[in-house]
Each structure stands twice: as C-alpha cells, then as structure tokens.
Length: 247
Image (cartoon, rainbow, N blue to C red; front, side):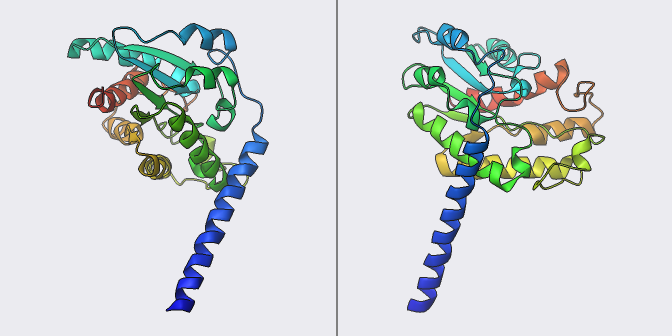
C-alpha cells in the first residue's frame, strides 16, 4: 500500500509540474496584449467609475463579446425583467485572457467593490490545445481572484460553422474537432472544469447555439465564426439567464 501511495503521489506531482510548465509556456508566448478597441488605458479608465445604484457587470473578452455588443444586449434583456443593469466592456479583437490579464489598467479596475459580477471569455480555439487550456485556466483563476467574492460567469464561445477550416486543420498541436458538436463539447469541458475549480458559473452558450442551429436558426455572420445580430442576442439571453440568478 505504501508503494502504491508513493506512485500515486509521484504521478500527481508530475501532473502538477506539467500543468505549471504548460501554463508558463503559454504565458511566454502571449506577452503582448491586444488593445483595440476596448482594452486601451483610456477606455479602462473611463469605465472604472465607483459603483452607484444599479448592479454593474464587467465583460472581459474578445471579438465574440464585441460583435453586435453582447454586453449591451444583456443590459437590454434585464430591463423587461424589471432589473436595472449596467454593463461595461473590456475586450479587444483577437484577445487572449493570458495577454489581457497582464494589463496594469485592467488590474486597477478589477478589484472588489467596483463590480457586482464579471463575465469572462477566452479566445475561441483555446479549448482545442492542451497547453492553451492550461494558460487559460491560469488566467481565468487570476482574474477571478482579483475581484474577490463576487459572482464570475464564464461565456464559452459557440463553435465555428460546419464549413469552417478549423474542422480540417485546427493548427499545430491542436485537436481538430470532427464537427460543431465536437467543438462545443471540447469548449464546454474546458470552461466547466475551470469553473468547478474556482466556483464560477458557466453560461451554456455553445449548447443553446447548437440547438437553435439544428432548428434552422441563422446565427452566424458571413465568416462562419462570429455571430450575426440574432446570434449575439441568443448569447446575451443565455448569459442573462445565468447572471439574473446571481445578482
């Protein structure tokens, strides 16, 4: 029994070392944060206003958050529910959370007492690469810790359309998904695992997206990756259903 226990402990230690090494490697590869349009120092200073009145929710993400203003749509959906909600966006096109978390201005505004909830979204291909997943998990944990005990909601992006090139070649060292359902499963698995470790809530956007597409809904932009207005509205609806229970 002692030998078996020693083997198990050794394996756990080796696994932890690999995870730490993988996260460090991704951090080294992604040292320069994207800033345009809403991760500039000027913008982040503008949204760092004291919390007054209505609940304030900060969205940290990338172009999937930006396209058709998902945060603004969440605020609009709250109104018919009789909830006054203010949202702010800290996002840039092509942003990765391992890059974004390095911004000094973001560290300044992500502090306890300024927000009532935070919504986090990482780069869409992160769940397809083991090393990227490690870096993403580290980034989400760091960002969640900065805001203290307030609710953190994860916004996993929907899978690319079935004709997207990702289903032929997801990139070096990446898992190539077979189809959108496979892509969505990998995405949900990543976000759910991290959420379980840090106590966050996962908005099931990919699952609801696939259901609507199967029913004939047109949700994609022309590029087959981003959303059209209807897709952004669906994402906002799913996020709001997760947020409303927490505010």
